[in-house]
Length: 146
Image (cartoon, rainbow, N blue to C red; front, side, top):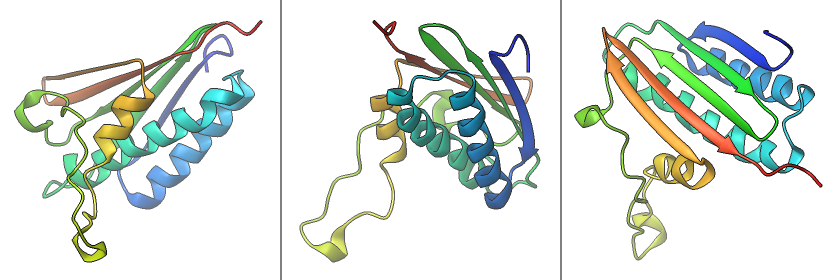
């Protein structure tokens, strides 16, 4: 913690550790003053991004750590997620176009909506890969309460 508005958390890139980390970060952000109307958006985007790290960045690579830093300000929240797994394809954030829906229930895609949700719920997304490290920044803007 720093000044009661920053939170740093490092955990192993496993499903169970990611789940526990997401829950801990969400709870801490709420107690630090994240507006209630933004809590669900933040938790969903955070879960999608961290689960992408666990499932894709560390696919075919020995899982290591995920580092998350949250900076909560009066009108915005920035979350930086860092890992040493595989970079995003093309070294860029996917467009966030949802997977096409099939015409039958059996034809529905199993995934393909994560980046769409992240794009829809955040105000800004930035990504860089340098020196073997991925850094994904998610920003959430919220107006000042009346």
